[in-house]
Structures are given as C-alpha cells and as structure tokens.
Image 1: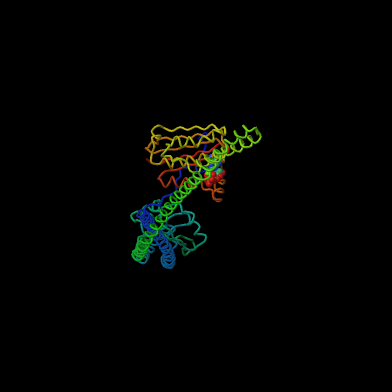
Image 2: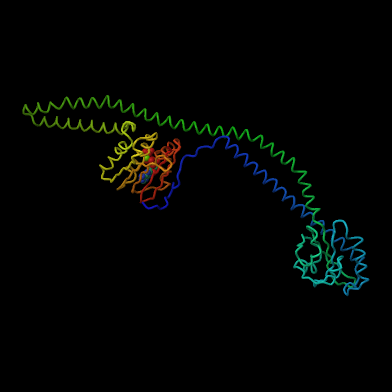
Length: 448
Ligand SMILES: Nc1ncnc2c1ncn2[C@@H]1O[C@H](COP(=O)(O)OP(=O)(O)OP(=O)(O)O)[C@@H](O)[C@H]1O
Ligand SMILES: [Mg+2]
C-alpha cells in the first residue's frame, strides 16, 4: 500500500482525555482575562474615535464663526496685492480675537493655493498645492475639519506641535473674491478628554468584570471536575462491561465444555463399537448408518470445540502473544489468504499490554475476514522508539469510507470504536486509515 492519504481517520487518534481540573480552570481564566483586555482596548479606541468626531465637529463650528468674524471685520481687497495696511488690519484681528487658547495658526488662501496672509509672516506669498477637498470647498462652501498631516510642506512651521486639527471655510473679500480661511487647533485636548473619560469609566468597568470572573471561577472549577468525573466513570463502566462480557463468555464456554461437549463425545464413544458388532453379524447397511452417525457426532464435537476456542480463547498470558495471534490467522490461511505475522523478539517476551494488543489484533483480523475479502493480511508487532509497543494490521482488501463506518456504528457495531476506547484507556493511540478499493491499515501504539 503506497502512502496515499487515507480517506479518513488518517491522523493518530485517541479518545480525548479531559485536562486536569486546575489546567481547565487556568485556561478559562486566561481566556476571560484576554476577553477583558479586548473589552478595555476596544473601549479605549471606540471612545477615542467618538471624541475625535466630536472634536472635529467643534472645530468645524469654530472655523465657521471665526471665518464670519474675519470676513466682517478683517478683510480688505488690498490683501490680494500684499498691501501692508491690509495685512496689519487682519493681523490685529487675528492676534486679538482668533489666536490664543487652543488655536495656534491661521492662514488665508486664494483658490489657486497662494497664502495671502498667515500669522507666521514667512508663509505670506508662498504657494502650495491645495488638496482635492480644499479645492472643492471653494465650489460647495461650508466648512470642514480633519487631522493635519504635519509632514506637508505648508505645515513646516507647525511641526513643533504634536498633533493638530485643521479646519477650513470659504469667506469673501469685499470685492467678492472667494478666499479660504484656515485655522489649526491643538489636538491634545481631544486625547486628554478621551483619557479622562476612560479613567473615569475603567475602574467600575474593570472591577465589575473582575467580580464576574471571581464568581465564575468556582463555577468553572466545579464544572471541570464534574466533567472529569464523568469521563472517569465512563472509562470504569467500559472496563467493567468488557470484563463482564468476557466473564460471561467464560461461563458459557465452561458450561458447553462440561455439558454438551462431554455428552456428545461420550455418545460417539459408546456408539462406535456398535457398528463393528452389526458388521460382524452380517448387517453392513446398519453398520454404515451407525458409522455415519458416529462420524457426524465427532464432527459436531470438533466444531463445538472450535467454537469454544472462539468464544473463550486461551489467555494470552498462557500461550504468549505470538502464538495467540498465530491462532487468529489460521482461519484466514485455511481460506487461501496469504497471512503473515512478524513479532520482534523483544516484544515476544511478553508485556503488560499483551491482552489489549491481542484484542486489537483479533478485531482487526476479524474485520479483514468479514469485510475486506483480502488476498494478503500482515500483522507486525514491534518495539516503538519510545519503548512502547506498536501493532500494525494491514490488508489489501476493499477498504471502506468514513460514511460506511459511521453507518455501521449507528447500527450498533462497535468493534472499532470500542477498540479505540480501550487503547486510549491504556494511554495509547490508534490510527485507522482506509483506502477504498485498496486496503485498510490499523496501527496501535501503547506506552511502555
Ligand atoms: N479491514 C476492513 N476492510 C474493509 N472494511 C472494513 C474493515 N474494517 C472495518 N471495515 C468497515 O468498517 C465497519 C465498522 O467496523 P467495526 O469493526 O467497527 O464494526 P463491525 O465489524 O461491522 O461490527 P462488530 O465489530 O461490532 O462485529 C465495518 O462494518 C466495515 O464496513
Ligand atoms: Mg468488527
């Protein structure tokens, strides 16, 4: 069988064991704390975006009002030509009424990007490219505000500030020429108010969540414990069921052996001389009938003994793992299947899990016989690298799909699931891989 990916069950499997109660609770608490962190961080950013939006609105309002003030009292046509008197008049108004507080810069722009006035004289007369939104403002009117990109050339003199909000509105010179009034406001007041809000909200929020966590922890603890107990209970029941079934088999085997089998053997023994007698007395036909009856009785006794072996095989402990598995293979060989067994010497000496390995081999071989129609079956038992024991049963039969297994399982056929549970109970792993049309591989590893 080439190592093609199996259709299902290709990964090593073992029935999941529940983690220890302490680990489960720790995991729960770590999860809760992570959730707490997400809530706090999420809260901070949500608050921040709300306060930024709020601040932008306030700044938009501020630029509109200041723009009206400047249009009414500070603008004259001379600004267009850089007239000194016009500049001084506007500067007086700006320095006196607009700047100060959180407003740190004022600029007045023409539609083609020339700075007519700024409270920073070095900017006056310089030209920069207006961005899309600013150009649109000349057509639409109104006002807008946004976070400043302090890296832009026009902001070379504002870089001393950490973060600024800039707002624009369009006003008109006395001759009707539209110009853009722009102011810059400090942003620190915004973050400060978000942090203030958060500082006020965080303690009750965190406290509440912590209290919730404290209440939940004992609950989680008891749930994890109950889960674990349930799991242990299930394992105990399984072991008890397996034990009960083999006890029952032993009883039936003993009853059959001591009762019917002995009786039939006795009858056959008693009848056998009768045939000779009849023959001596010249009644060969009668002798033949008796012979046939004796033959059938003997065959019946042989069949019964084979059945006894099947329902109560000699214990692995008595015969050794190799011989016990060899017995499993003989019916296959009788049916013309090439069946091979390879047991490493180290393992043949016997180990603690021999009984389990035998059970696994028995189920796997029985499945191959009943479902696979194989031409070849091989069983190998080896020492694993970590000192445990590995059993591998491989056939080249028809294989199966996951769906087929699920269906059989739903019908109450538990051969493979029981096997997996038993192996997991012993701390081992099971791998079941099947390739429809090509065969099946069952691999089990149990620890030392
Ligand atoms: N070696 C195999 N080759 C082909 N099909 C298999 C093989 N082993 C198992 N199967 C398929 O998987 C199904 C489930 O196997 P499982 O041993 O769990 O139950 P079962 O053999 O049908 O019944 P039970 O073992 O309870 O007598 C089988 O019915 C069969 O269809
Ligand atoms: Mg089966």
